[in-house]
Length: 617
Image (cartoon, rainbow, N blue to C red):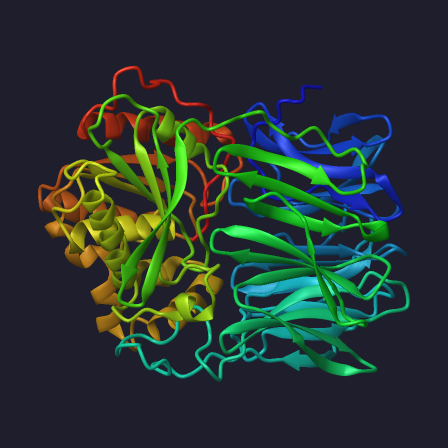
């Protein structure tokens, strides 16, 4: 078994609750993401899955059975299981409806809860491993499974954080026990906000977004962990049937957090995303103490509390590929990498109307004094952010002689609720405004070439590429848009229910209710104004950014004689086959090389194979 696991995964191994030496994780198998077991005692790995589409969703229960979700080309499928040591591969919940995975939870006594999305409904079932389950709930709301109590009596379901029913607790027979609301504030509540669409991603004062973090794993406890946004900060909350809802406002954070229970105590591990980097805290809810868990500067992509106060975490920074680390010495799978990204990596802050825009800047190692051509990599979301973390595309570009700028524009997470909710210029246009300001700043400082910059984005990032090229022609010399939103109205009508709900929050209504807002922010509206050469990559089975609206946009480019190329993948939006990502990377680098001034002599011409997948919208 090789140790060169090159598929870039952002989660830790799952650990068997009854035997921490048994783990299950995802890694590379011939360019696809597949599921493996890891025996820490014997230091031995075994491949469990071998799917043509790749496999990423997995779990391990207290009895040592490995679970995985086997999906077809439409990303729909069922749960399967096999013992840690091998043996027959069996249907996990035979007879359960197929769909897209929305969560799995297994109690210590073997009770299984699972949720799937099918058509316009979420279906939740409960049963036992290998037996036909019973349906607990079927609802048109897009939900995910948030957890199950150790005794199997209560199930948590999560909706969007600002939904009137952000978190719902139901009994094992489907009876609603509790509904906890999230609430966005009215638009324009910030004094500095201009008139425009409502809050797209977070509350103004009065808003109280809510995220489900799961039930305590302690036997005999039925306590649910929550994170709530209050005003300009985030706090932990807990709920239990006997105690009700408690807000732990003695422990607040100024930027986004996630939290997980320690297995034995009423203590929580908090991971904070702050200014492109990560902090870990151990929070004791009973003694009201918060202690920093030391980690190197950079990003913690995932962290899990273990027995006796130990912590496993997945660490990276821009110059180093992700590595697994632990504070207790238990042997983790050898998923680390000695990969080091060449060049110089730094931070830059640019003044804007709403504050300072943070950019992660990577500069190539090149001779001479001429500023290099620059590629702006635009993150998706919009509720996401670029991290001080390894990115295979950054590696490839810097190694090929390009400067790379990753801009955490307004709407990005990691800078607090105010930054995330601020869209004064409207959806998309606020972000383009920030990208243009950073470009001007980099040029003025002599860090990048004035007449050689390109935009490159995936999903929502690809949408911003198209909008920037059409709304501000002349600033950019090339663009690469991978699986974009290109026509807001058509995308809204054909996308998933969860993304339709997001669109309504972004724009303050449907296309029928506020057509002018969709038109103003749609790349299709300004397609004829594009002057820079453009590469558009679509996926024929993409449910999030559907292919039809991309074809409409390409037709508009052709009608306006805009120079462009199209590339089509036979995949969905989220794929786990590395070959597709490598193909896009190589095509994109060739496209850039033909349209921007050549990088410095001696720069690498063969990029490293990217251990990674696409970012989500």
